[in-house]
Image: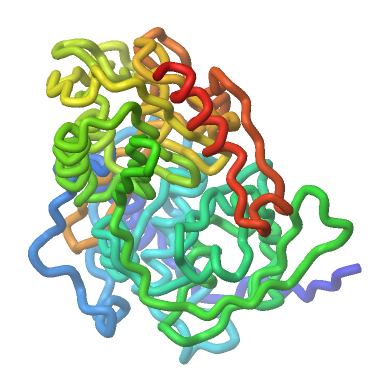
Length: 433
């Protein structure tokens, strides 16, 4: 049982006049998120252009919080909210917190904006301070330090969406679907995705211990992982001896569209008997990359994916550019529970147009649309604005893409170097030779 000690408020409370001048400041905090111009958007338009100079990591939390007390501009809210409460809490923390020398106003300010985004209860709507914005941008460029695994939230538990091929997490034995119950001994209960990522990441050569639970385990298991520099070349190819051309796509990063274009040209040159597009454990990324890749099969002008929001006027369709270098090759797309977001868009489009056979396991079901907005000080706001739908109107979100042919694998098979899902894809293609 918890015990609390309360004290009555002391003398010298803030004057009414002092309160009035603070009255609209929280509205200002909300409006600043609304009024700054939208950035390119991570999923809407592809390559986000950061402001020229993000704050240095060392100086992110230096400087003063300006505009704390602003006159009421006459703005009104749709609900009855007293902005004074925000500053009452702010001042109470500064006045009463035991370690006053450890208080940092910038951290308090950015923390409140993080809480504002988190209050929506959507794990994909996130505020990034300038330092985290820089880290996030590095992620999208394909270079960072860590363990090389995408994490998400599934049933309120931090979950591995996909370990990246050849990276420390995969080498240590981490699998898609693993539940991360603790990080370096700290429980992940009620932990946000971003807090988990921050704890998991670290400098090259350092160790992190994940306590994981996996279906089939009788108890949890601690897995030690040595962090490394993670550089992800998102597209790799191989022409098998049986003349099947395999294209493995690990992410939809900034380099993916160009790398896949080169892969498609190589495939045309090699003239294989069939194609296997391996999207297993691909956590997604840029929308424009997914649309570009789908255009290698889908006819020009046909929708690859549509987005629907609460405002019908903001609904959009993203059409194929109709490159169609690969539409004459029999194609199988491999997916599993670690295939998410842009992976599901590509697989869904090829399935709906009967341009490929989808093989493997049901995908993750990450079908919500985020825009990435760069703010005035180098911070970023990632906001869920809509949901994805396949060309036939199927909602990807929380449902995933169901394969045409279910093919599973086991840990024993993987440990033995076997790949039953790839074998099934090859079998299907050879039946068409």
